[in-house]
Image 1 (spheres, helix red, strand yellow):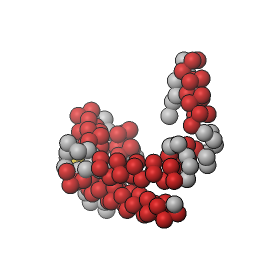
Image 2: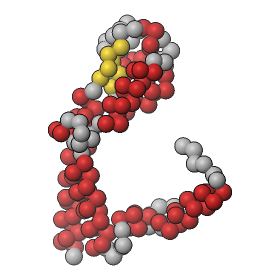
Image 3: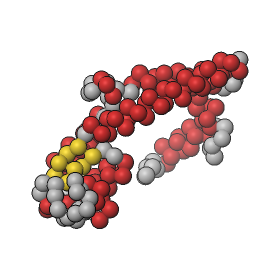
Image 4: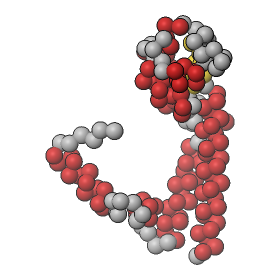
Length: 161
C-alpha cells in the first residue's frame, strides 16, 4: 500500500512538473505588439515597464502584451482598446487547449493528475480526492461546502470574487 502511494505521488509530481512547463511555454508563445501610445497612456507605471519592449524607456513604444501573470490581469484592467483586450483574453482562454498548439496541450497531463489523485485518496481510504483534501481545510468536508452552496442558492445570494 505504501509503495503504491509513493509511486502515485511520484507520478503526480512528474505530471505537475510537465504541466507547469507547458503552461510556461504557452505563455511565452503569445504576445501582442502595441504601437499606439494612446493605448498605454493610462497604464500604471509598473504595467508600463512590464509591457515596454525597452524597459529603460517605458514611455517609448512599442509595447508587448503577454500572458505572463505579472502582466495579464493588470493589462486587462487598464487597456482601453476592446479589440486588444479581446485578443489577449482569447489567447489566455485557449492557452494549452488541445485545439491549439499540440506541443503545449495539457489536457492529458490534467487527466493523469486527476487519476493519480483519485488513486492516492483511495489508497488512504477516502472516497474522493476532494474528501481527502478537505480534511485540512476550514470547511472540513465536501458536505459542508455543498451545504454552504445550497444555502446561498436558497437565499438567492450571489458569490462575488
